[in-house]
Length: 330
Image (tube, rainbow, N blue to C red; front, side, top):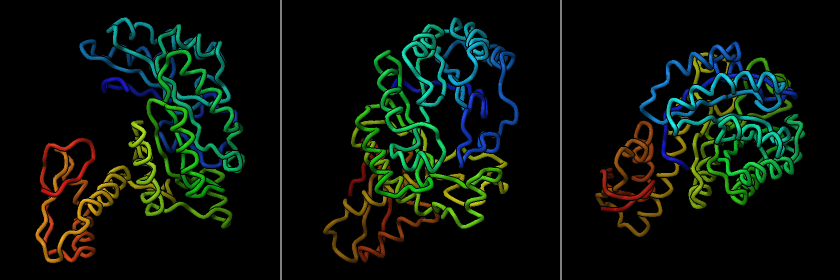
């Protein structure tokens, strides 16, 4: 992955979407009611700080499934932004079945450097049950084209979709690793009002993926991607006022979902680090700077769990010079 840069998000909810996926209501998920147009892009250009590398990102919808003139208007409006700083770039999200070599060449000519694919699953039965309208082979094909063109590839996956299981999600993650993306986003399924999934859930045709289910699974997925040196960009939906106010009626929605997952990863690593410790000990664990709260867990849940499991007298956590999400006994 390239060095972290500022991102200017532009939301185009449902733009270009050719299928009604059972889980999707982009307007509620993104918090944007109206898709950004060329005027919004130009306004974003005016607000950009030319002194630091910045990425203009089109989120939501399926960019390359929009009519080409509409794509061109947005990309044309972004060109002054690219001239502000030679390190500026454009990112967009789209569907795997709306990518081919000609499309990627055109996007690249407009300065697009990163394409995010809404893959969601690499299991065709899950994709079918979710009404995605594409297959796992479409994801493989699109990913190969994007990487061959020298663009950065981000893959988005969902867990807890209709027909999904832990085994299928791990299969999807393993397939992602084989495709060597530059990053992944993991979105556990949330039941949102105004979707077909909401109606399925009301009828009892869909059993939701709970926060606890999703935290446990995503901790496994995170470790898998970390071992493969693939950056996990995001865990869980970005919280919005509307989702938090009741639009998210069931499923794995939590405003601090990523923090819960990281905390679970730390707990597992602390358990491994404490193997063989004597009961009744006072233990000090070391983690990287800025990570103490993740190791401690919400309401000290990790500390309490470790004290119980190892019959310890006390556990404290300090910052030390350790790489990544490592845990050491100090």
